[in-house]
Length: 412
Ligand code: ATP
Ligand code: MG
Image 1 (cartoon, protein in one colour):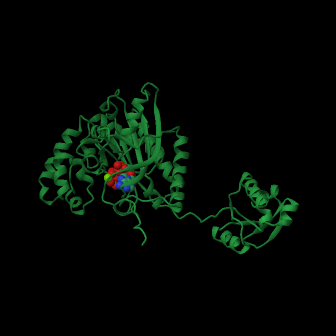
Image 2 (tube, rainbow, N blue to C red):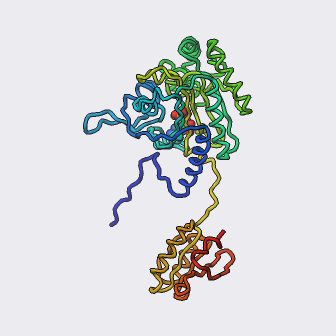
Image 3 (cartoon, rainbow, N blue to C red):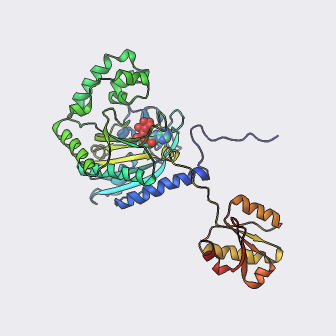
């Protein structure tokens, strides 16, 4: 009797070669564009103290109240798998003593963990490409960050994306707005979903982006933050839009955009598609001027965003299936050593090469075929004597004897 096969945890899946090739395209676009804006890559730990997220993301958010993979380790420390990257980035920046090093522009790529209900585009382990800019005081930085997000997705060539922006106000104008919103929501509490009823007291702005249709229907003329901004926030928001206009970046103001994390203020934004159903947000971010101070550092304005790698990859066309450049087919025991050495030389000449492992010619050619190679280098006694390979073009069937050193030049 065979043993039962083990499965991965629900909502956590493997990245197999075809999908990883698509992830790599997204990553390459990110590295290229973020590099052009002088951002540097950082790599932060996956395990962080639970306290970090309680203090930053906020106790009343969905992430902290119900989605974290948290546990107490053997030493009694409260640890979790990071649900997002910004809090850890701020911690790393403070811990690394970089507060006096001038403006810092960081990006990172890695897995995040949230115990959400798995569905298309919503996983329990997913990857984010995140960006953080510390010491970013004004609307110019906001416009640049938005421009960088736009350039990244343009470089990737994902069609039909929309940029939506909003302002979440600040500590001086948001409380007044929040009160107005709570009054509005309380009058409709009996028609809101259970979660939203709870949100009215705990996190009322989060009701605005509830995915339940009947909740959206109740929000028709809900008060909007953009209409309740203080003068300073209003000016900031206007200047961000002027920046985007100067850069000719298309956007619209969506007063329903809020973020699911407590630390955001002023500019918040999303880039959305209508091709992924309810999971249409591929990139989201905003300004978080209070977070560094909240985590024990000096007052430092900052802004960032994170893109969902899997969601972006779903929007890409399949890669053209490209096999290795070449397969080495070795005919007979006597040539094995020579064939191994030729495979090595061909790789050093820049080709991707699979060695078909010797044995019968039929098996080796079948393998070369399955690999989808463009060329086969056939090696027998004559080739070994002459220091050559018999190069076969798999598309045309043509064969020619070529000195190994010259093969790379014949495969262009
Ligand atoms: P949503 O409203 O879709 O739940 P969010 O507000 O929780 O998103 P953020 O915390 O801002 O998302 O994360 C930034 C991006 O990371 C999202 O726009 C999305 O592309 C991706 N993302 C977030 N949660 C998941 C998930 N569970 N699975 C896959 N991708 C995710
Ligand atoms: Mg979420």
